[in-house]
Length: 116
Image (cartoon, rainbow, N blue to C red):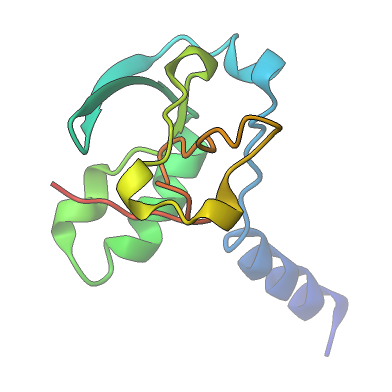
């Protein structure tokens, strides 16, 4: 392999990775926000940018053209959602008062992919 071949391989790998800063202080600086409905709740979400959207669209759009205009969002801090009591086992409750945990956009699971 020549150096140019290695460089091209690295560029291909770079197209498969996107880093999203979801630190609350950074999210506060992002200007595009939406109101989103989720299981009967309405929450504020923050668009995390074109690079993340293009990454998702490039992957998901291969199989379904409806994903070509996908956006990636994070829940705004003030829109925290409790996990539904119906789906929360006692062992998952938090704190001395055994409160319901925060579910954000994921309803308590690490990843949620939603379509409409």
